[in-house]
Length: 401
Ligand code: SF4
Ligand code: SF4
Image (cartoon, rainbow, N blue to C red; front, side, top):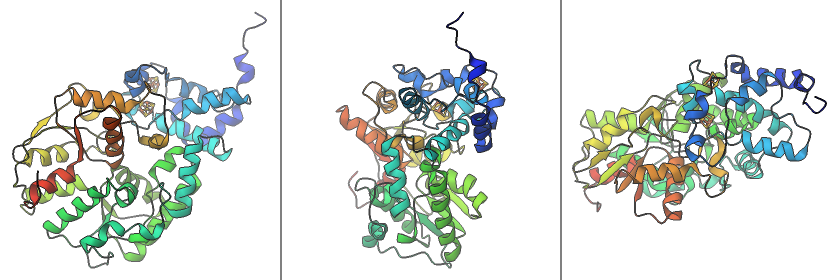
């Protein structure tokens, strides 16, 4: 009995109250049924034990992120930053407990004390300094659009195209911005960009827990939108979509945001874009967490793919639509290297490859980057393409497909 841990003596009401104040109030709803752990992607990975239902309990006891022992705290930090914010648990929890909010509260405390992964500190710093996580110069942000002769947004235009960071700077992913812009031109839409006045939407760093830098970034974008009188923004990243729709209004950002797949499907339905060229490929669609579970957009991406002549659309049995498995890039995880054998993307790519597909179609720049890296690392013979790229190939008869 003398060695028995005295939990009551360890309860830390100060930490509990701080966590609740920072948004972890849902911890009180949890009744420890454990369903969240069985739908969490870490359960599919299988090599890392992630008992996610412990977080609400530790929160109400004030025991999360509270250790003063350096090694123990490091283990806790690793655990807290394993959550990729996919919301599979929220989708299946009988009480709708917002687990990522509970974890984000713990992350905010860790960020305030500087106790979070070094890679993520670097990302937060780069966004603070130059407005993008790659650390690229702010003045080069609109370079991707130059050869397409896309100009700055002005208020007589129909919409702003907000490409965000990877489609603006990454050599491979710039093709998503170019394809989307090419399709908008084909549909006769008048649009412009904000160029160097645009900053990262800030979604990832908010989920990392860097609330102050998120607010600074969000306010900079909102001010830019207001100055330019933006009423509608079209986005390629569903991470921008959820941030613009659900989070910017709290900071005065009142404008309409639409994901490229929704808008492009509407253009096809109205005959403004006509997929003509046959793409005789078996294509499997991966539902990004932020587009599917978090925004309820499941059909427009599929409808676009089905409208492309010759394309055969495949699905991952049992892990499709709201049951899709995360690519592993959310909530800052894009910049964390977990050991081989503990990577969600490996599991998801295997599920996608097992359908017999020749192409993995995505609708999110994070998924595109994760899957491309994984396919290369695993030496697999399968292409990864954004839906905008596939559609542009089919619409643009001058391209080889
Ligand atoms: S599924 Fe919901 S109620 Fe059940 S343990 Fe998880 S968070 Fe708690
Ligand atoms: S959001 Fe996703 S990764 Fe995070 S705990 Fe829930 S199911 Fe697991």
